[in-house]
Length: 221
Image (cartoon, rainbow, N blue to C red; front, side):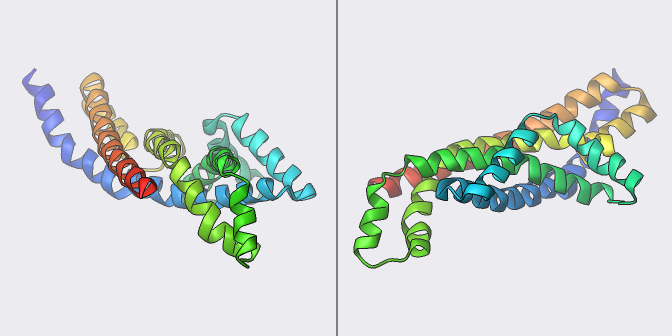
């Protein structure tokens, strides 16, 4: 038992370091890119641009209908077979961004459609252009509506980054596997890394609740 606690204590700084320097950056970078993709895809669908809308629907269909782990393998292990080599971290960012972009696009599209149609007409009546209406009127309401769902997706992405260990990204779970292979304390280490994921998710949940309260207060003003 003493050996187990020693491994837990000694491994905690290593796991936390990988979490703060790899897991969290991977999550935030991927989620930021995913939001850009999601907004573009959602706006194309909302505007009902014929050909582009079908392309967006196909993208969402394919990405949401295939496992994230398979997508990681296609990019990291599959592309080299056709002469395209991508390092582990960029490959993970690409896959997580594209994957999350498909899910977030549907969230944002639903929020866009929930904005009353009269908002667009009111903007036109005061002489605003389509872009001005979308930027100053529609999108702020959209993101206020979509914020809780997007927050949940961000928290889910933190946990999903553990899959990046399968393509040799040295994030937190990969580090736990390394230590477990050396010490053979698999149960203790995997529980420890689970607790750290729980800690990260809890912090993000608290931030999400704070943001929801702020947006709720803003919406009532």
